[in-house]
Length: 572
Image (spheres, rainbow, N blue to C red):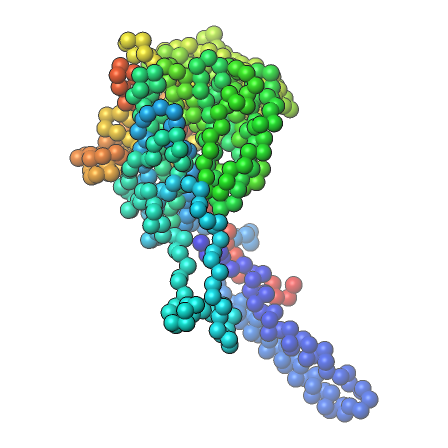
């Protein structure tokens, strides 16, 4: 993205011709100096003044000819403009380990309204590179060649040097490529215990709103379940609430390093007694372009029923995800939480939830006293018998909410019991659904931010997706769009009215003539703010398999500062 030209840049450009003139003026001998004729001195002074005037005129001319990037506000400040992002990246974890299953990757970019053109979108496996990620040395330039000129091939044939690879083009070994906005691309991920994580990149017109989903279906007798997540941007901090190492739980953290240098990671575990200190969880090195998993039971010092997990990157940037498996009771990815905040909202509680367990972490600095509220069809209300929760500083607290939804879809909100005493918390919610034969499946929800102008989830199946919408403030109007299918179909759109503080669930609008999978985009048209989630339900072998993902603002546009025209900058 081109940066706007600021006044200081214009000044620096003007100073280049001004410096020689100033030096010449300083070298002129003063009038009356020995051996200097008065007329000659005056002539030199006049010439210096004329030269300075010419330079100043040129400077002012340059400043006037360089128009500002945008109109200035009346108060003298420049109004920022909005521009589309030109590159978007995300990281998907290693496919579900330990059990047989099939994993699908789906990429999608909503159709844009901006002027961006070209670009590419692709997914590549993050396997350790065979050679260091440094460029090979080039042949020396022939004698007399200008610095920076392309050199001939070492053979002396005169052939041009190999051009540098285009960073905005999909690599030849890409696992999946996205052809155009508005149509998802889908394909299988690698399976097995050695399967690596995946890096996803989109540039140009494919960058704004680019999103990737990873979905795993496991049909093995003891571990039947559906695990899904939306791949996240690489970062240096990830929070998860709702992990465990008790009973049949097998939870692990997946670490994926898509960068060209090693990353050093600490995994901090918090239980009902505070931080669980273990040297084995600190200083974990993740090689460049590689993936690795860390089983929580190896660093938790025994069985802990409820855990909050903080992945902290000391150096580098990584993608991190947490997978939870509870024997025959269900499995899923635990979504990364929003950063610690005084209020956390978790959308996506299905009406037929048979159990719900809330897990909350408070920072070491202060206790947290929180009120629990549900968003029903008519607004916020307090569930009887579960009005509040107290969390000690630096510790984790949990409470079983039972059948808290009472056959109605809902969102859950935690907020300070006393507005004068806000404490930044992290929260997660395990939700269980049970079939008529007693078999169950679990999914995890987490604190999420508003969808903003637009948010998208990529992998949806015919008759299997439900969209949960919660207005956390004023009444809102939301547009929900089902994209064309990966193999064909015509997009479908539905407008939804939300009452203030209310939750509405609708089947995802399916494209006419659907072939393949499709994406769902949610746009806030008025009111709100609105939080949203998608439930994908794929029952199999009498197990009500499901997974829930929050929809998050795609941040497809950025604010670009503008410069104002100020010729006087050259005089400062």
